[in-house]
Length: 254
Image (tube, rainbow, N blue to C red; front, side, top):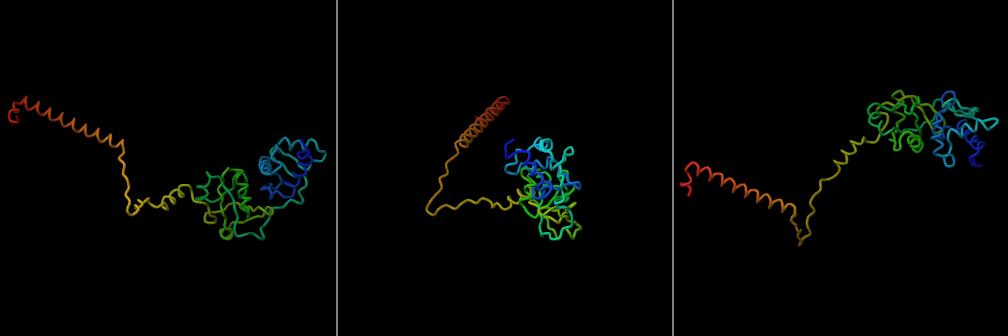
């Protein structure tokens, strides 16, 4: 590793992310202070200068430093010193609106059933900042659907919000009627169809006229149909003449 990517610098950054401000990176530790390694690496991939970090780099910190600031338990990682890490608790000063994202595939389900935790988390993770909500949403979908949660209406419906640092809030569930979502793709198409006016023929400029050139293909088809009708008529007359001659009636028609 180079100087900017040395285990010591990575260790210092890990201590800050996991031990002081996980919410700043859209991370919510479990009650034991652990976050999933894959969630941590997704957060690192969004940070300039740290996108190179992989699990091997985390293990190198533990193996090469005499007093590493983090510890790994299978697929989880946490800071050893967590006394400055924000704890989850009641929300004292909550804004009127919170934001969260869901996958596009989950969009129709959420609209009809409410917002449930995603990505294996036990909580619906929300943020008062759209940018943070969209940042977390892109970890589960390249083009996530942003939802806007009305806090007062949610609380009236029995939702209890918890604080998880300065930038994150948690809830077990957000029921229908307590949030707004973009129109579903089908609804968008129908709305666009209704809004699109019927194309009207533009009136010509006074004193001018529009040249109506015949369609060569249509003209060719008309000629073909005409020849076919004439041929069919001749064929019918020949058949009738043959029948009349056979029946001795031709003399009445000659």
